[in-house]
Length: 371
Image (cartoon, one colour):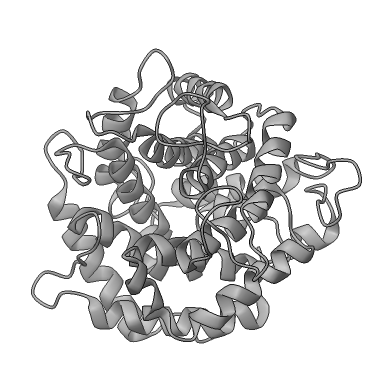
Protein backbone atom coordinates (compact mmCIF):
# COMPACT_ATOMS: atom_id res chain seq x y z
CA UNK A 1 0.00 0.00 0.00
CA UNK A 2 2.75 2.44 0.96
CA UNK A 3 4.62 1.72 -2.24
CA UNK A 4 1.75 3.08 -4.32
CA UNK A 5 2.37 6.65 -3.26
CA UNK A 6 5.99 6.76 -2.16
CA UNK A 7 6.95 6.84 -5.82
CA UNK A 8 5.58 10.34 -6.15
CA UNK A 9 7.93 12.46 -4.06
CA UNK A 10 6.03 15.66 -4.63
CA UNK A 11 2.83 14.11 -3.33
CA UNK A 12 4.58 12.75 -0.24
CA UNK A 13 6.19 16.09 0.59
CA UNK A 14 2.91 17.93 0.10
CA UNK A 15 1.03 15.52 2.34
CA UNK A 16 3.66 15.60 5.09
CA UNK A 17 4.04 19.37 4.83
CA UNK A 18 0.32 19.86 5.32
CA UNK A 19 0.11 17.52 8.29
CA UNK A 20 3.06 19.30 9.93
CA UNK A 21 1.53 22.68 9.09
CA UNK A 22 -1.76 21.73 10.75
CA UNK A 23 0.04 20.79 13.95
CA UNK A 24 2.21 23.91 13.81
CA UNK A 25 -0.61 26.31 12.99
CA UNK A 26 -2.67 25.31 16.00
CA UNK A 27 0.13 26.00 18.47
CA UNK A 28 -1.09 28.91 20.51
CA UNK A 29 -4.41 29.08 18.68
CA UNK A 30 -7.58 28.63 20.70
CA UNK A 31 -10.47 27.25 18.70
CA UNK A 32 -12.84 27.07 21.65
CA UNK A 33 -12.45 27.80 25.32
CA UNK A 34 -15.69 29.01 26.87
CA UNK A 35 -15.14 30.65 30.23
CA UNK A 36 -15.00 28.04 32.95
CA UNK A 37 -15.55 25.09 30.63
CA UNK A 38 -13.55 22.18 31.99
CA UNK A 39 -11.81 20.01 29.44
CA UNK A 40 -11.92 22.53 26.57
CA UNK A 41 -8.33 23.11 25.54
CA UNK A 42 -6.32 25.39 23.37
CA UNK A 43 -5.29 23.35 20.39
CA UNK A 44 -1.64 24.05 21.18
CA UNK A 45 -1.76 22.33 24.57
CA UNK A 46 0.76 19.51 24.91
CA UNK A 47 -1.84 16.86 25.76
CA UNK A 48 -3.84 17.84 22.70
CA UNK A 49 -0.92 17.11 20.38
CA UNK A 50 0.07 13.61 21.51
CA UNK A 51 0.04 11.27 18.52
CA UNK A 52 -2.18 8.22 18.51
CA UNK A 53 -0.02 5.27 19.37
CA UNK A 54 0.37 2.63 16.66
CA UNK A 55 -0.69 -0.63 18.32
CA UNK A 56 1.13 -2.89 15.87
CA UNK A 57 -1.73 -5.16 14.86
CA UNK A 58 -3.92 -2.69 13.04
CA UNK A 59 -3.08 -3.54 9.44
CA UNK A 60 -3.30 -7.21 8.49
CA UNK A 61 -3.06 -9.07 5.20
CA UNK A 62 -6.83 -9.43 5.21
CA UNK A 63 -7.24 -5.70 5.72
CA UNK A 64 -4.84 -4.89 2.88
CA UNK A 65 -6.57 -7.25 0.49
CA UNK A 66 -10.01 -5.98 1.48
CA UNK A 67 -9.00 -2.35 1.02
CA UNK A 68 -7.42 -3.02 -2.38
CA UNK A 69 -10.54 -4.79 -3.64
CA UNK A 70 -12.78 -2.13 -2.13
CA UNK A 71 -10.93 0.80 -3.67
CA UNK A 72 -10.91 -0.89 -7.06
CA UNK A 73 -14.64 -1.52 -6.86
CA UNK A 74 -15.37 2.02 -5.67
CA UNK A 75 -13.40 3.42 -8.62
CA UNK A 76 -15.48 1.29 -10.99
CA UNK A 77 -18.66 2.83 -9.57
CA UNK A 78 -17.71 6.41 -10.42
CA UNK A 79 -19.85 8.01 -13.12
CA UNK A 80 -18.53 9.93 -16.09
CA UNK A 81 -19.25 13.26 -14.41
CA UNK A 82 -17.19 12.14 -11.40
CA UNK A 83 -20.17 11.56 -9.11
CA UNK A 84 -21.37 8.72 -6.91
CA UNK A 85 -24.98 7.87 -6.11
CA UNK A 86 -27.05 7.45 -2.98
CA UNK A 87 -30.05 8.66 -0.99
CA UNK A 88 -32.16 8.39 -4.14
CA UNK A 89 -29.91 10.65 -6.19
CA UNK A 90 -27.88 9.54 -9.22
CA UNK A 91 -25.24 12.15 -8.49
CA UNK A 92 -24.90 13.06 -4.81
CA UNK A 93 -22.32 15.68 -3.78
CA UNK A 94 -22.03 14.38 -0.21
CA UNK A 95 -21.50 10.74 -1.18
CA UNK A 96 -19.09 11.84 -3.91
CA UNK A 97 -17.16 13.69 -1.18
CA UNK A 98 -17.09 10.55 0.99
CA UNK A 99 -15.77 8.53 -1.95
CA UNK A 100 -13.06 11.15 -2.45
CA UNK A 101 -12.11 10.86 1.22
CA UNK A 102 -11.96 7.06 0.88
CA UNK A 103 -9.45 7.38 -1.97
CA UNK A 104 -7.49 10.02 -0.03
CA UNK A 105 -7.40 7.72 3.00
CA UNK A 106 -5.35 5.37 0.83
CA UNK A 107 -2.81 8.08 0.00
CA UNK A 108 -4.15 9.68 -3.18
CA UNK A 109 -4.69 13.36 -3.94
CA UNK A 110 -6.08 15.07 -7.04
CA UNK A 111 -3.93 13.75 -9.90
CA UNK A 112 -1.52 12.15 -7.41
CA UNK A 113 -1.37 8.51 -6.34
CA UNK A 114 -3.02 5.37 -7.62
CA UNK A 115 -6.51 6.90 -7.48
CA UNK A 116 -5.49 10.48 -8.18
CA UNK A 117 -7.71 10.72 -11.26
CA UNK A 118 -10.71 9.51 -9.29
CA UNK A 119 -10.07 12.08 -6.55
CA UNK A 120 -9.79 14.82 -9.18
CA UNK A 121 -13.10 13.78 -10.73
CA UNK A 122 -14.73 13.78 -7.28
CA UNK A 123 -13.35 17.26 -6.70
CA UNK A 124 -14.58 18.52 -10.05
CA UNK A 125 -18.09 17.25 -9.34
CA UNK A 126 -18.21 18.70 -5.82
CA UNK A 127 -16.95 22.07 -7.05
CA UNK A 128 -19.56 22.04 -9.83
CA UNK A 129 -22.20 21.42 -7.13
CA UNK A 130 -21.27 24.57 -5.21
CA UNK A 131 -24.05 27.14 -5.39
CA UNK A 132 -23.68 30.89 -5.11
CA UNK A 133 -25.32 30.79 -1.67
CA UNK A 134 -22.52 28.53 -0.45
CA UNK A 135 -24.68 25.40 -0.33
CA UNK A 136 -23.01 22.33 -1.86
CA UNK A 137 -25.81 20.25 -3.33
CA UNK A 138 -26.33 18.44 -6.61
CA UNK A 139 -29.71 16.80 -6.12
CA UNK A 140 -33.26 17.54 -5.08
CA UNK A 141 -33.41 15.31 -2.00
CA UNK A 142 -35.04 16.75 1.09
CA UNK A 143 -32.02 16.99 3.40
CA UNK A 144 -29.06 18.75 1.73
CA UNK A 145 -27.18 19.64 4.92
CA UNK A 146 -25.83 16.10 5.40
CA UNK A 147 -24.21 16.28 2.00
CA UNK A 148 -23.09 19.86 2.57
CA UNK A 149 -21.23 18.82 5.72
CA UNK A 150 -19.50 15.90 3.98
CA UNK A 151 -18.62 18.07 0.98
CA UNK A 152 -17.21 20.86 3.19
CA UNK A 153 -15.04 18.28 4.96
CA UNK A 154 -13.74 17.01 1.62
CA UNK A 155 -12.97 20.49 0.29
CA UNK A 156 -11.23 21.37 3.56
CA UNK A 157 -8.96 18.35 3.32
CA UNK A 158 -8.15 18.93 -0.37
CA UNK A 159 -7.58 22.66 0.05
CA UNK A 160 -5.27 22.09 2.99
CA UNK A 161 -3.05 19.88 0.84
CA UNK A 162 -3.25 21.76 -2.47
CA UNK A 163 -3.87 25.45 -1.58
CA UNK A 164 -5.97 25.80 -4.72
CA UNK A 165 -7.56 29.29 -4.72
CA UNK A 166 -10.70 28.15 -6.53
CA UNK A 167 -11.30 25.60 -3.77
CA UNK A 168 -10.62 28.24 -1.12
CA UNK A 169 -13.32 30.60 -2.41
CA UNK A 170 -15.98 27.90 -2.48
CA UNK A 171 -14.87 26.52 0.90
CA UNK A 172 -15.20 29.96 2.45
CA UNK A 173 -18.73 30.27 1.08
CA UNK A 174 -19.58 26.81 2.42
CA UNK A 175 -18.36 27.83 5.88
CA UNK A 176 -20.35 31.06 5.80
CA UNK A 177 -23.49 29.12 4.93
CA UNK A 178 -22.88 26.78 7.87
CA UNK A 179 -22.52 29.74 10.19
CA UNK A 180 -25.75 31.34 8.88
CA UNK A 181 -27.68 28.07 9.07
CA UNK A 182 -26.82 27.29 12.70
CA UNK A 183 -29.95 27.12 14.82
CA UNK A 184 -30.54 29.10 17.99
CA UNK A 185 -29.94 25.86 19.87
CA UNK A 186 -26.45 25.68 18.36
CA UNK A 187 -26.85 22.75 15.97
CA UNK A 188 -27.93 22.09 12.40
CA UNK A 189 -30.65 20.11 10.65
CA UNK A 190 -31.66 19.01 7.16
CA UNK A 191 -32.23 22.41 5.57
CA UNK A 192 -29.86 25.42 5.39
CA UNK A 193 -32.09 27.47 7.67
CA UNK A 194 -31.67 28.18 11.38
CA UNK A 195 -34.90 26.63 12.65
CA UNK A 196 -33.99 23.45 14.54
CA UNK A 197 -31.24 20.87 14.96
CA UNK A 198 -30.34 17.23 15.48
CA UNK A 199 -27.12 15.47 16.46
CA UNK A 200 -26.72 13.53 13.20
CA UNK A 201 -26.56 16.59 10.95
CA UNK A 202 -24.64 18.59 13.55
CA UNK A 203 -21.64 16.23 13.56
CA UNK A 204 -21.36 16.45 9.75
CA UNK A 205 -21.34 20.24 9.97
CA UNK A 206 -18.90 20.38 12.89
CA UNK A 207 -16.45 18.15 11.00
CA UNK A 208 -16.71 20.37 7.94
CA UNK A 209 -15.94 23.42 10.05
CA UNK A 210 -13.03 21.64 11.72
CA UNK A 211 -11.43 20.66 8.40
CA UNK A 212 -11.87 24.19 7.07
CA UNK A 213 -10.37 25.68 10.24
CA UNK A 214 -7.38 23.33 10.08
CA UNK A 215 -6.84 24.45 6.47
CA UNK A 216 -6.72 28.10 7.50
CA UNK A 217 -10.31 29.20 6.84
CA UNK A 218 -11.80 31.50 9.46
CA UNK A 219 -14.48 29.93 11.63
CA UNK A 220 -16.18 32.11 14.21
CA UNK A 221 -15.49 31.00 17.77
CA UNK A 222 -19.07 31.78 18.78
CA UNK A 223 -20.32 29.20 16.27
CA UNK A 224 -18.20 26.45 17.81
CA UNK A 225 -19.10 27.50 21.35
CA UNK A 226 -22.80 27.26 20.48
CA UNK A 227 -22.29 23.85 18.83
CA UNK A 228 -20.63 22.53 21.99
CA UNK A 229 -23.58 23.74 24.04
CA UNK A 230 -26.01 22.00 21.73
CA UNK A 231 -24.15 18.70 21.73
CA UNK A 232 -23.98 18.73 25.52
CA UNK A 233 -27.74 19.30 25.67
CA UNK A 234 -28.26 16.05 23.71
CA UNK A 235 -26.53 13.87 26.32
CA UNK A 236 -28.69 11.67 28.52
CA UNK A 237 -28.10 10.54 32.12
CA UNK A 238 -26.81 7.16 30.89
CA UNK A 239 -23.98 8.90 29.02
CA UNK A 240 -25.45 8.27 25.59
CA UNK A 241 -26.79 10.92 23.24
CA UNK A 242 -30.30 11.48 21.91
CA UNK A 243 -31.27 12.56 18.42
CA UNK A 244 -32.36 16.04 19.51
CA UNK A 245 -31.77 18.16 22.60
CA UNK A 246 -33.59 16.86 25.68
CA UNK A 247 -35.22 14.35 23.33
CA UNK A 248 -35.46 10.60 22.89
CA UNK A 249 -33.37 7.82 24.34
CA UNK A 250 -29.72 7.09 23.70
CA UNK A 251 -28.43 5.13 20.73
CA UNK A 252 -25.12 3.80 19.43
CA UNK A 253 -24.90 5.90 16.25
CA UNK A 254 -26.13 9.06 17.98
CA UNK A 255 -23.63 8.64 20.80
CA UNK A 256 -20.77 8.07 18.37
CA UNK A 257 -21.79 11.30 16.61
CA UNK A 258 -22.02 13.16 19.92
CA UNK A 259 -18.59 12.13 21.19
CA UNK A 260 -16.98 12.83 17.81
CA UNK A 261 -18.66 16.25 17.75
CA UNK A 262 -17.10 17.16 21.09
CA UNK A 263 -13.65 16.06 19.96
CA UNK A 264 -13.79 17.99 16.69
CA UNK A 265 -15.14 21.07 18.46
CA UNK A 266 -12.13 21.03 20.79
CA UNK A 267 -13.52 19.29 23.88
CA UNK A 268 -10.88 16.63 24.52
CA UNK A 269 -11.70 15.56 28.06
CA UNK A 270 -14.24 16.04 30.78
CA UNK A 271 -17.26 14.27 32.21
CA UNK A 272 -19.34 14.37 29.02
CA UNK A 273 -16.55 12.76 26.98
CA UNK A 274 -15.90 10.08 29.62
CA UNK A 275 -19.57 9.23 29.92
CA UNK A 276 -20.02 9.11 26.16
CA UNK A 277 -17.03 6.84 25.71
CA UNK A 278 -18.27 4.58 28.50
CA UNK A 279 -21.62 4.24 26.74
CA UNK A 280 -19.92 3.39 23.46
CA UNK A 281 -17.60 0.90 25.15
CA UNK A 282 -20.62 -1.07 26.31
CA UNK A 283 -21.52 -1.64 22.67
CA UNK A 284 -18.31 -1.75 20.65
CA UNK A 285 -17.37 -5.21 21.90
CA UNK A 286 -20.26 -6.38 19.73
CA UNK A 287 -20.19 -3.99 16.73
CA UNK A 288 -23.29 -5.52 15.16
CA UNK A 289 -25.34 -3.57 17.72
CA UNK A 290 -25.69 -0.68 15.27
CA UNK A 291 -27.65 -2.95 12.95
CA UNK A 292 -30.61 -2.76 15.29
CA UNK A 293 -30.78 0.98 14.66
CA UNK A 294 -30.49 0.63 10.89
CA UNK A 295 -27.40 2.85 10.61
CA UNK A 296 -24.52 0.43 10.68
CA UNK A 297 -22.05 2.32 8.48
CA UNK A 298 -23.01 5.77 9.73
CA UNK A 299 -22.66 4.66 13.34
CA UNK A 300 -19.30 2.98 12.91
CA UNK A 301 -17.94 5.82 10.76
CA UNK A 302 -18.21 8.07 13.80
CA UNK A 303 -17.52 5.38 16.41
CA UNK A 304 -14.23 4.62 14.66
CA UNK A 305 -13.24 8.27 14.86
CA UNK A 306 -14.30 8.57 18.50
CA UNK A 307 -12.34 5.47 19.49
CA UNK A 308 -9.31 6.58 17.46
CA UNK A 309 -9.29 10.03 19.07
CA UNK A 310 -9.76 8.51 22.53
CA UNK A 311 -6.78 6.24 21.85
CA UNK A 312 -5.43 3.71 24.30
CA UNK A 313 -7.59 0.72 25.18
CA UNK A 314 -10.62 2.22 23.43
CA UNK A 315 -8.88 2.07 20.04
CA UNK A 316 -6.95 -1.14 20.73
CA UNK A 317 -10.20 -2.96 21.51
CA UNK A 318 -12.46 -1.38 18.93
CA UNK A 319 -10.47 -1.37 15.69
CA UNK A 320 -9.60 -5.08 15.40
CA UNK A 321 -13.27 -5.94 16.03
CA UNK A 322 -14.70 -3.59 13.41
CA UNK A 323 -11.92 -4.47 10.95
CA UNK A 324 -12.77 -8.16 11.04
CA UNK A 325 -16.50 -7.49 10.91
CA UNK A 326 -16.18 -5.26 7.84
CA UNK A 327 -13.97 -7.77 6.06
CA UNK A 328 -16.53 -10.49 6.76
CA UNK A 329 -19.32 -8.30 5.34
CA UNK A 330 -17.46 -7.43 2.14
CA UNK A 331 -19.21 -8.75 -0.95
CA UNK A 332 -17.06 -11.52 -2.39
CA UNK A 333 -18.11 -11.07 -5.99
CA UNK A 334 -17.52 -7.30 -6.22
CA UNK A 335 -15.34 -6.17 -3.33
CA UNK A 336 -17.88 -3.58 -2.20
CA UNK A 337 -20.32 -3.28 0.68
CA UNK A 338 -24.07 -2.77 0.85
CA UNK A 339 -25.82 -0.63 3.42
CA UNK A 340 -28.41 1.92 4.38
CA UNK A 341 -27.82 4.42 1.55
CA UNK A 342 -26.60 2.17 -1.24
CA UNK A 343 -23.36 0.54 -2.35
CA UNK A 344 -21.41 3.73 -3.05
CA UNK A 345 -22.10 5.14 0.41
CA UNK A 346 -21.51 1.86 2.24
CA UNK A 347 -18.30 1.11 0.36
CA UNK A 348 -16.88 4.59 0.92
CA UNK A 349 -17.72 4.47 4.64
CA UNK A 350 -16.23 0.98 5.07
CA UNK A 351 -13.01 2.02 3.34
CA UNK A 352 -12.61 5.15 5.45
CA UNK A 353 -13.02 3.05 8.60
CA UNK A 354 -10.63 0.32 7.45
CA UNK A 355 -7.97 2.84 6.42
CA UNK A 356 -8.05 4.89 9.62
CA UNK A 357 -4.72 3.30 10.75
CA UNK A 358 -3.02 4.92 7.73
CA UNK A 359 -3.39 8.27 9.54
CA UNK A 360 -3.30 10.19 6.25
CA UNK A 361 -6.26 12.58 6.62
CA UNK A 362 -5.31 15.49 8.91
CA UNK A 363 -8.87 16.02 10.21
CA UNK A 364 -8.87 12.56 11.77
CA UNK A 365 -5.84 13.46 13.88
CA UNK A 366 -8.28 15.50 15.95
CA UNK A 367 -5.65 16.98 18.30
CA UNK A 368 -7.24 15.04 21.14
CA UNK A 369 -5.50 12.84 23.67
CA UNK A 370 -5.48 10.02 21.15
CA UNK A 371 -5.31 12.07 17.95
